[in-house]
Length: 328
Image (tube, rainbow, N blue to C red; front, side):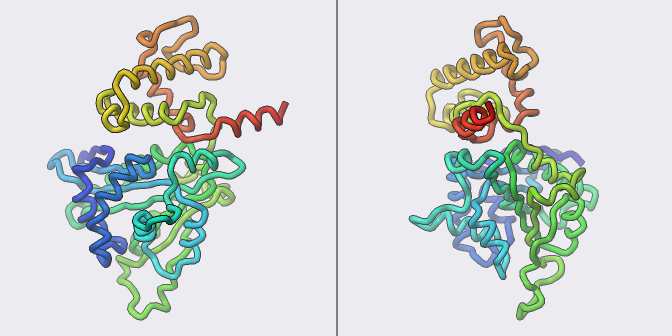
């Protein structure tokens, strides 16, 4: 009963589209476009996808994806009379000239602080049905939860939103820490969905977490302000390096020369070194008085960043500088 995780890549997309339901079974044309949409969203850092693999058979068992959504999308879903959150998001990605509901890093950075905040969203989640035992599905789901917490931690979260299908998951959603926002008025439907496919919109706001402490989702609302303020490019390199990608892979994905990647690493190490020297942060293995990138182990820096995900999230440094000046 061993399952592993990897970040979604092009070779996964067709399978993910085939197992995905949540309204796409009624929109086959849109479903066929999903691999193309996902590829663009991942390149633009607007979507993070995780795939769960059965280590015994090598088969994919589940996948999930998440991103940051606009306030207008949250309002739309909270007022919606019909489900299919992901369909709405993907439809908008295809509309020309329309403001997208899934936000890109430049949009996120203007919102990612305590006074405004961002909306975290589970965009997709699907499991292969009728292949595993109940205990195995619990392991798969547990890994999905941990992946969600890892990829969406570090933001100044004000709202979390997700959609799930099936009354059997009501207990899970409660333990997870979210509140059911809507069942989409199922009693008024001409043909109510089966219990195992009944849709629910669920979520949690920053104002409601006092009663949720101890639940998995509450940890996403524990915001710590960044101190290093890496540039967007530096963050993109660090995020990919934290996933185990080599400089060659990062260079190809970001379209940046390998020599330029090395220059960014030197700038990253210098920034951490200076912050360590000033006492702003303390990264194990990067002691004051050292010089040269070769003496600053990458693995130790990435390990430190795993505990400080706020350093990898888009932010507007000028906002924090103005806030600090106002306090003086």
